[in-house]
Structures are given as structure tokens and as C-alpha cells.
Image (cartoon, rainbow, N blue to C red; front, side, top):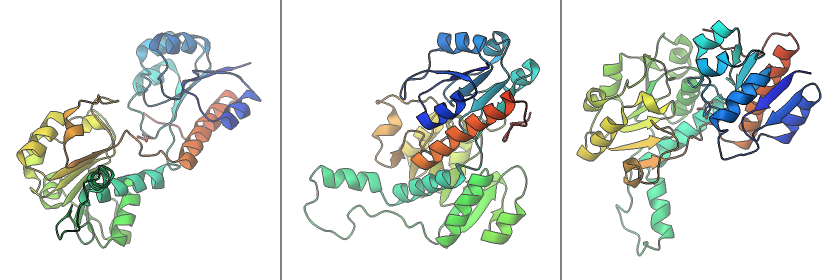
Length: 320
Ligand code: DGY
């Protein structure tokens, strides 16, 4: 019987479904990532791994996994997996696109609204008992409606954000590898060079995946191009931002605020400088974290495993 290892505690219904056909084991923790030595040992014995974005799946792992046929990553992003090494080892890699598009777009929009309208600051203010009187500029933020949103990385999630932004009468700019005519037509989105977008946007939203091309793509020079009133948002991958440059840009007033779902190093430590800034709304990589969507992601990852281990075509294969 083929062996499957799941690197985190996932929904029991998904596990039971896999157990009908396979010998399934898992790392039984919701909060703690599987230790590296356990992952390597399990990879050595398994035909399939269901992994999280926090698991490093690299050449070392593939070289000690003679039976491995598939790594099903429970994320749309797969920068935690060395795709070339997987290809060399003849291992199929799958991800979980589509099922998380709207949920992640909702989070990106929530982060934009929360940062612009100072929602977490306001929530702390009232909880701390600081509210003594109504006043005209008490916790006054910035408008989102009718402002200019610049989206960097106009894949499916970017387009879902554009759809929401159109409903807020926003002017939408985007920068991505290839033009998205459907988004131009449907939401009036305009393709811009990166520097043009940075100069014009009130909100700069990064949704780009992490690749060698995008690593450190937003640094000191890019923050300098942004308006002093701009709000920077990252719901893609942390290392796309040069975090030291972001801290500097926030401290010097080069930009007005930031909303962050992702960070250079995850998890961030409690004393991370970004966490003590009032103009930063930080959340712990929860882009796709609704119970419905997380279940759909688990199920899609498991369906990919089932397909590959029964010699069928995977549903959502990542190609080189
Ligand atoms: C993904 O799927 O890549 C997201 O970052 C998870 O929230």
C-alpha cells in the first residue's frame, strides 16, 4: 500500500478519505512545523508528501526519498519547494490555486481598509479605555474609495482584488509579467511600468510570487518613488520586500503606512520593529485562512495525491 505523510494536523475528513486507499501518517500538531529530521525520515519511506509552505522541500530531501512520487503543497505559492530538484528526481509537485483566490483577495482588501482607516489602532484605543470624547479628527484615517490602487502581480488574486477595487470606484493600475487584457476591460485596470505605478499609487499592493526575479524587488529606491502618503501592502511573499528599507521608509515618513500579511522571516519575533509601529497593521500570513478555504486547500492537495498514486493526472500540477 502506498504511504502518505502529512506534515501538519489537517481536517480528519480529508485524512479518512486518504486512508481508504493509502497508509497515512502525519505530524500531529496544528501549530508546530514538522522537525526537519522527521520530514527527511518520512520522505525516505513515503510515496507522497502533503506539505505546508513552512516545509523546506529541497535537493537533500529528494536525494533521500527513493519512492517519492508527489509533493502536494497546501498553498498556491511553492517557493518552499525546489522545483528543479523535484523535476530531476522525477517527483510531481502540485499546489492549490483557484480555491483560495477570493479569500486571499478579501484579506488583501481588508488589510488595505484596516491600514487606511486605522482599524487595529482604533480597536486598541477603545479596548484600552482611552475613549473619553468624540472629536473631529479622532483616529481619522485615509479614504480608500476613489483612490489609486497599484497592484504588483496581476494573477488570479490580483484580478480578484481589482474586481473589489472597481466596486470602491478605485483607479486601478497594475504591473505584472504580461498584460491582462481581461482585467483592463472588466475593471478599467491600466498596465504601468513599475516606477510609474509606484509614483502614482495611493496604495501599493504586492501579490507577486517569490522568485529570483522578485526577491528584494521593493527596496529603498522603490519606496523613494512612492508618495509620502502611500500605503504599502504585501500579501504575496515577505522576501519580495527589502524589510530594512521598508522600516526606514516608514520611520523617515517616505511612506505613510503598511499592511503586511507576510514577512522576510516567518514567524516574526514579538520584538520585530514593524510590530511596534502604529502605522503598520501586521497579520500572521492568513491570506487564505478561512475555514472553508483551508478545507478546500487540504482537499485539493489530497485529491492531487490520490490522482498521482492511482496513476491519474494531477489536478493542479506545478510546471517548471
Ligand atoms: C499561499 O497559498 O501561497 C498563501 O500564501 C497561503 O495563505
